[in-house]
Image (cartoon, rainbow, N blue to C red; front, side, top):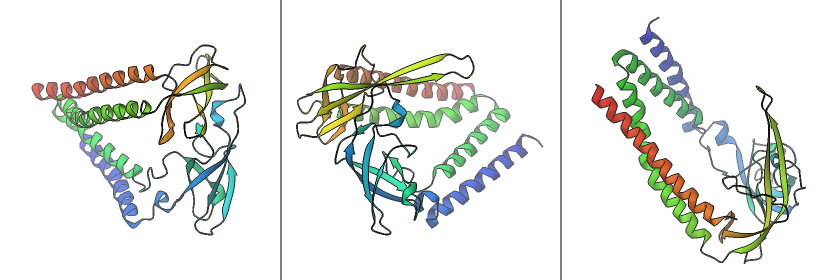
Length: 287
């Protein structure tokens, strides 16, 4: 079987996957569409133990209603229950999803409606078909077609991402500075140790846990933002917290680092966009 035969088989298999996936989505019978999605409410927040693992998340007690029965359930996030809860306060709403009729198989999620149409697999199949066509075009017609084939979508996505990300980062910083900061404190430092399976190298990571009370009286417990460097000797340290008044989950103990991150993101996005444009230009010239 030649390259074209393999391409036909490749496109046929993944084309069938895409058609079946889109058909099931239109019929409303995908697993994601049948999943029950509700909002729960945090009733109690427990202080993390100093030295424990960040993988456990902040321990909370959550209540929610099963819409099929009207039953109210009270659960905790102990064990494996979806995404870790890294920012919590009493009264905060949190997404919960579970299979129909099985509320005790609940999973926590930060984005309740992500993937609600069940299109992840068919979209992935379409991408693989496109990648196969580009690869075979590069083999038949020369590698410049590969540059064009992968450079065009890269450039289009970059042209959308760069200005959208810049606007989002500007809005974030404006929101963080819209109200006066509040004092906070590092109440615990979580510790995780991992061992590389190949060379046995041991890596230790530390995650501070901060608490602060907003001007509205909301007591927040949260992990130190992962994008920010961890200060030395953080346990018991007093910090200054800038937060979004409409959503205390958006906060930072290092506003200067947020400004540096904004600049770095913009530079990286522009470089990625230029790389895509360069690939398309080089491919077009080489044809």
